[in-house]
Length: 174
Image (cartoon, rainbow, N blue to C red; front, top):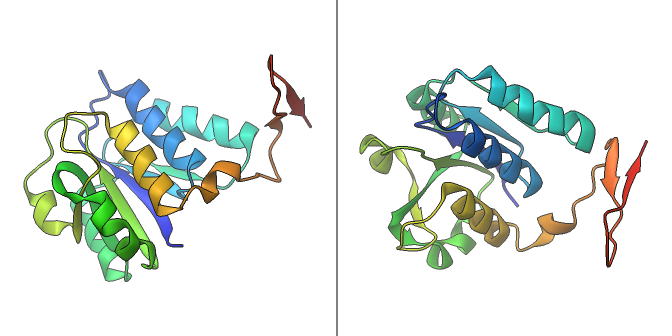
């Protein structure tokens, strides 16, 4: 399975904090190693890293990233770029090809994505051809990429862990 990071572009700090935080939390929970944020927003970084400190893992978040340079650097180091867009080729047609890559940078947008992204991406991938959320696109893409194996991931360094229960909420704290 490839090493995966997410590049979040188009983030508007005054509007998108909650959604961008959820992009990062989804990326972490579903197997990505980290998130690059093409905006300055320490609040998003702090929120995600707080979850990492309590729930475990080594997920990174870096804000203030210049998205063009991030893509160039990723590709220069041998990685591939996957842009999630409803205008791309169907995910189900591409996921097996992407799964064998070593490193994948998944680009998810907020507001209108610059047209340049379509040319810089190695893959423009459509999860569906209908309007939808970047959070749902990322979740479905990562689930298909990792074939559901990420759903039972354990974090040995977690301070809090959920104890599965038929009813109610059970957590175990270290």
